[in-house]
Amino acid sequence: MPDTTVHVNGPDDSGPPSGGRTGHIGKIGAGYAALYINRSDKPLLVDIKQGITLGRLVPDTQQPRLLDLTAYEGQERGVSRLHAMLRPLPEGGLGIEDLGSSNGTAVNNSRLLPHMPHRLKSGDLLMIGALEIEIYYEPQTVSTTPTGSLEGSGSRSESNATQYFGEEGDTEDSVPVLQLEAPKPALMSAYMATVSLNPLSPSRDMQAIEQVIRQLKGSNVRLTLQIEANDANGFDEATVRALDEASRALKFSESRFRSS
Image 1: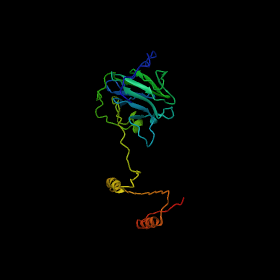
Image 2 (image 1 turned 90 degrees about the horizontal axis):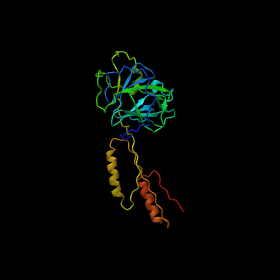
Image 3 (image 1 turned 90 degrees about the vertical axis):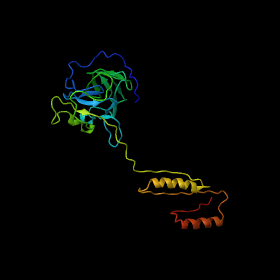
Image 4 (image 1 turned 45 degrees about the horizontal axis):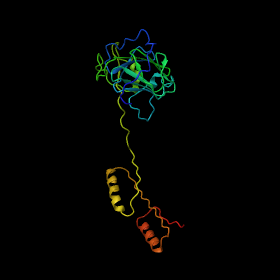
């Protein structure tokens, strides 16, 4: 999604929930957000400098910067695979956009229109389907590092998200940090190509094909050549005989003539 200004849908008179959370105070900096998911008292701190997608991970797919909510009863609570996007605003602050989800996104009980960005306030209550997320952040220009006592907390995979609340060894002052990384490129393990050769100068084309084969050195390569020729006047006996002999000499797996 391009990094452009998010336009506000309009004033939100409902406001964030009263009271608010305190577990993140002094522990987050600009470019990070603290998420309290499903009314948990322990926040999950996420790097939002490049934006994140809220949804559910689909096996064997590439979904860059996805916060997988499956471990938080995401499927049971109606979270779509690509449900909503959080991203920082150039002038500071944070925006959310519903990505056309099946069960919708709401901010402080006000449902958002799909694909209409909405400016968030720190402390807003998000409903991702029926999954609750209370979100806090520093409404400043995005920075590169968190502040406070986050040192040594480390980067963790979204697949271990269920460990972030009440994990053994956590202290009352510790806040887990989730740093989303772009997925590794898919492993390309097969190559296939089809080409038509110039019948007037096939040797020149074969030189290019040989270069491709050299690049595939060490791979299991199978090269198949198909010849198809049509002559409205028919082939004479000498041509038929010459083609038969050449086919046998080259050990063609298949060669045949067809009459009109």
